[in-house]
Length: 114
Image 1 (tube, rainbow, N blue to C red):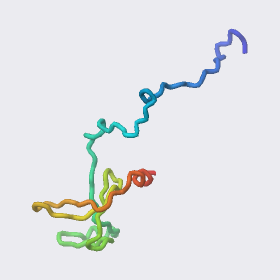
Image 2: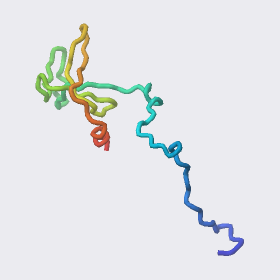
Image 3: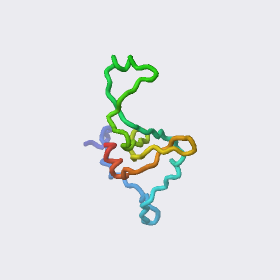
Image 4: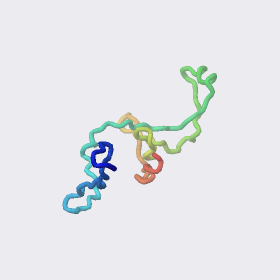
């Protein structure tokens, strides 16, 4: 290394960042206010079926597609494609709804994302 070599770069010290916690406080609850109004897609799945395209093209009004789930089994409740709960169909004031019977734990939801 020569004194006038422009390609010589001194070794930099590691970057240091300020403590992100105010006064060393531990915040176990996240401030979720910034995302509370973000819309998500909630969907309910009664069941699934695999059918050949030939059978799919033959469907018309009144056709019945048999699902792999039996009558009375719970539905799956998804948010943006992620399973979050299981439930059952209810009717309230002539409208369909879902009563949640089991909610998937947050740790299980995170595990399923990986």
